[in-house]
Length: 106
Image (cartoon, rainbow, N blue to C red; front, side):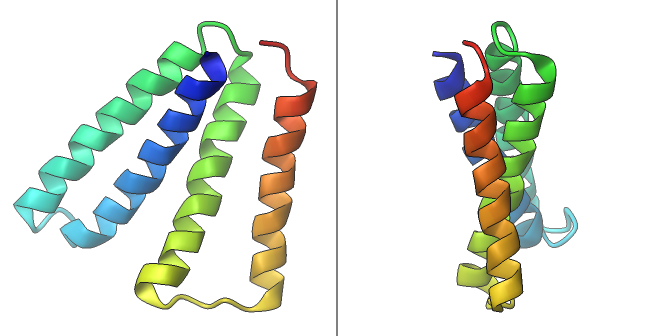
């Protein structure tokens, strides 16, 4: 179950990172409030996952999901660069996340 909490925390991290963009530096109050709420939820879910996962693994997977997912959504929503080197780097992050899942105890 810890991995489910961790996945949910990572998805929330993607959501709040994208929310930061929409809040325009916290100058738009509705996206800012939503962003802060999702940030809090992300930390709560990460904390639940850390009850049974090693802290290093949980944190690395959480940031990896957030970084890779936010980069992909940035490409889709904001027309950010999609060059092959950038995509390869994102795939390496995903491979690292999968590797940590494979070698980590629950």
